[in-house]
Image 1 (cartoon, rainbow over the protein chains, first blue to last red):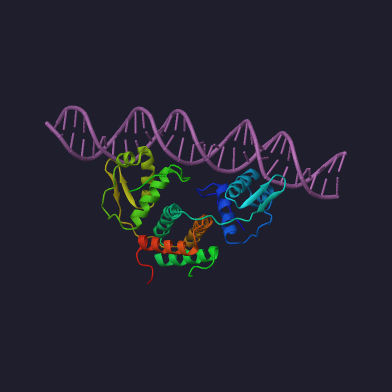
Image 2: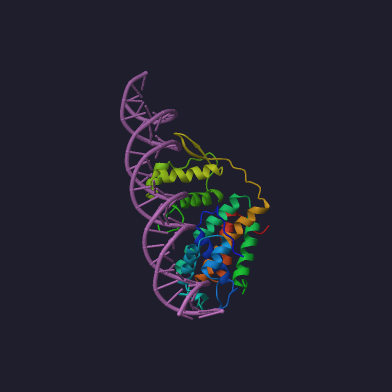
Length: 129
Length: 129
DNA sequence: GACATTTGTATATTAATGATGTACAAACTA
DNA sequence: TAGTTTGTACATCATTAATATACAAATGTC
């Protein structure tokens, strides 16, 4: 289940959104499925329900959720957007910085590469066409 | 050269530290080499020199720089720390979230995997032993 | 050697952001 | 119908970021 790292530099609502997005991408949820209510998830995570609501709003903005008042959050059918030329560029920067942190902490390029391939497979399915 | 993204959610001083760390990891600088002064880099980036100083302090804490008063920042000889079992764990979370964002934006697992391998090679050298 | 300049640092201030407390209006439930 | 549950809106408080300003020590120039 989703876990909140209070020591992290990224805000709690963003941690929630990031974690849920990863699960959504991996296909863990089907369209039409209901998400836990903001209050239920808030209690589960030990945060305020407004914080969860903010995360849901972000995911709704990205097209993942339909957020109907008094009905809870429902997983939407979402067509994958087309990646423009800048999409990969936006991806490169944080990727490089993340890898640099890993290497600085003593991880080897081999370990990193293995884990990255593994994670891409876990989230996105096939890698080698 | 290093660029600051004002629209980014990560703070400016952290962007600077991240970018410089990536260059340090890649071996672009040699021990003993001098970094630009906080004021010079600040003007270059269009930020306040205290912001650059904060980034330098972070890198000094990580062992990358020696920060002697009135002398500027000097690249240190730094022995790679040993990666504990938790090191990889700390790496996994942000990696998954980053990959999820890429996939959500329309990038394919193949593209992502290729770019990740490429970046690991660029920063860390050999990947296949 | 005297003196202006250059260096990183320390402190105060201001603005922005995050997380929570509280209240509310609409929909469901019994 | 009455009470509960839902996402939302608004106010508040604390933390963080970025800057302005001043300072003390080292360097360079004459």
